[in-house]
Image 1 (cartoon, rainbow, N blue to C red):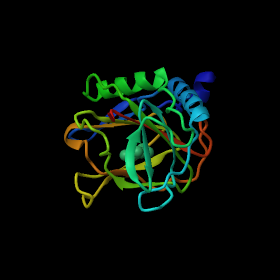
Image 2: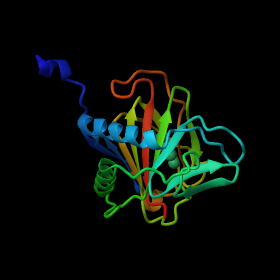
Image 3: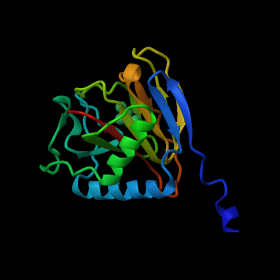
Image 4: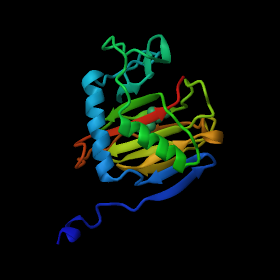
Length: 217
Ligand code: SIN
Ligand code: FE2
């Protein structure tokens, strides 16, 4: 009976190539590990709450953000950058939970990027309507290191384009437990997230979390 009740909930892991250097690892994170990651997020956000940052142009980002690790990504009127201190708390960003590090390294390995040790993890929260327009991750120093991006909670449509903003992006549905890894020839690919649809997720309620791991410094 229990088997019937839960049948169909767990998805089978699979690997989907996106372009050379970019892979979608579907259902890479099982539910137990997703729960552990969400516990880690709660700890991080206790120390450094999420906030809506301003773009250099003065727009408020619809995605709420925080960071953990030695460096955190911030944006304000002065520009985009990484810094060791949280401008809101005045303290260092909280340390990266062990479960975060282990997952990021395991996912990078699975995608063919050995020895990935992230020093920065952006913690994004999308509520319905929040989006991330097409951009490149280009504030990091070592472009030989990949980006590892983990989805938790409500599904989202991920856009993955080419090296020029005008390249037509592919669209992929990302679900809770999916991981996207990009590096090498795809490291500077434009990517983004369509406005999040309304919904309820058993683990996160009415939102999506995204953890984006980088080697920033
Ligand atoms: C990002 O590009 O920083 C976020 C991507 C995502 O939310 O999946
Ligand atoms: Fe990004």
